[in-house]
Image 1 (tube, rainbow, N blue to C red):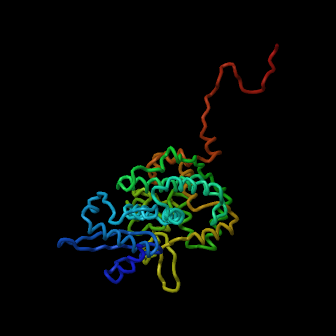
Image 2 (image 1 turned 90 degrees about the vertical axis):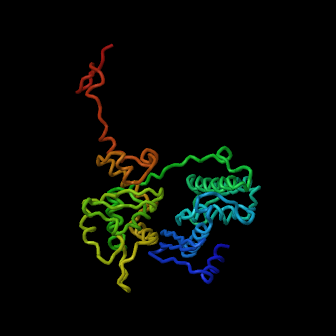
Image 3 (image 1 turned 30 degrees about the horizontal axis):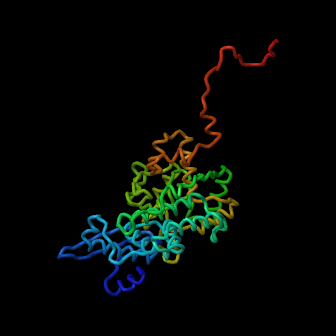
Length: 377
């Protein structure tokens, strides 16, 4: 439906979106109401169609006085199915990442035609299928964390339905659908594996080398690294500003520059807007890294490393900072965590932790070091 609106919107009004990078769009919405000029701008991550949908959603909110004040209003047409409710929820929420968009699309595909008064039973049956059959994409059973995210989305959608008085109660309760216990990933590369991976990246995907070296030393999300710009670089204090609204929790933070990378940042090409870039020989342009999953997987395969995600470098970098004596509070600030993620998902290297153990000089005054003597009965 929104796709059709976008197509009509191109002829009825100009959709002012500009591509800033791969799947990165600058949206500039301008409108008039009661003689007043209204304007809203934002940077959006997603496909071109999704950016157009976001443009129309922003414009509708600008023209709707109650929506601009943040109040909830009833939809113009009755909402009868879970799919229609899911679309309404996305309109209210606005910007979402590509990773979360996949989750929403999956729910819409499987449960979009289910009437709202039947969603409880159908969702319960859907979860049983998820836990029983492996994913078609990976051939593996879904993790508890993935299933928990699906439950959280469905619950949030139905909570909105209750707030809008579309339904009387939310059938997706915490008692009926309790959270599965999640097992955090525990993936660490040895020094030998790190060196092998760096060598492969240097020879096969040189444009990723600087990003990898930074990620191994500073806990970052991939999206933060990809979107770092020259304007956010502070060479006086050797730091990089991650702006508010560009992180997962929308809270900005500062990332320190590792000592062995100061030369890299001081010698960035003047033509590059991004701190981590790829050079296109045909056009002579410096482009953002974009989605480099394919190149990353190829490097892992050639380095004979299995089950390692780029996001796992975030874990390793946080652990390394702790092992080198950085206080936990500082690591948390650098990583941009609002909650105590260090205790839940991250840990010190086992051998390094043992080196931090401090014993008392002696446990009992009767114990002496040296050769043990047999006691006499």
